[in-house]
Amino acid sequence: MPPAASSRALPKRTDSLQAIKNPQLFIAIEDEVRDCKRVQTHGQEEDLKEALSRMMSRVEELCALLKSSYQTASDVETSLTLCQSNLKLSLANNEMLEDALRRNSSSKDVGWRRSSRDTTSQPVQEVHPQSQRASLEEGHEYRKGSNAPELESPSLSAMTPPTTSPSQDSRFFRFRFTSGRTTPTQSNSPDLGNQPLPNGLRSPNSALVGHLTSASLPSLLPPQSHEKELEQLRAKLEDEKLKFEKIAADKKNLESELESLSQALF
Image (cartoon, rainbow, N blue to C red; front, side, top):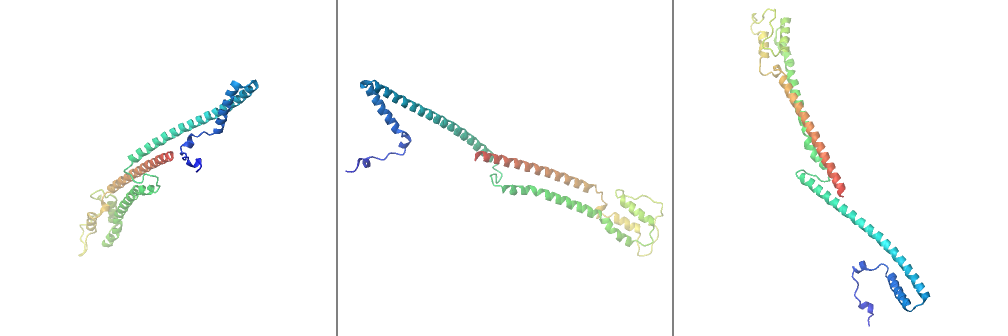
């Protein structure tokens, strides 16, 4: 016949959780209680004393077990309370992170990839060089227009005959420095435009007037318009700088907030 142990069914895995840690102790206590009852009914005085001493020692052991089990139970309760608080905190952090991601769903690379800083900051930084380039081009055009009369002045001196008087030169430069006026100041020198000249030569005054009144010279216009444009461009540049700094600060605050949330979560 097969042994009786093989015919028994194997215990379930959950039975080990309900098993008593010290089964021999409780078996011994049951035997001693049974002996004490028998001594109480049929024993003598010495047997009663021995049974009483045994029961007192067992009571002390049981009190120690109760103390240890009470301490273990209190530790388990504290651990459970701490786990519950951590679980609530993690749930709150998850909700806050989901709200932050939901608010910033339109932006790209909101997560923990640090490469998003370079990709998001490039369009903002491109505004500054473009505005600076436009202001430099305007300043270059302004300087180019202001240097135009100086470049054409040698051609005028080449066209004029060598017999011109110093009063004409002073009159020419006086007219240049007072470009806002329409007519130059009258001088005491005689009018050379009415004097007869040889054939094939023109009056230097007429050539000078025709050159100064031509509409193709932007240098004779008042430079106030260029200065106003430069001031406007400078103001726009300052505004763009302020906007860029504000956007960079907002982005930095958002990244720090997301970083703190991620650290609190994980």
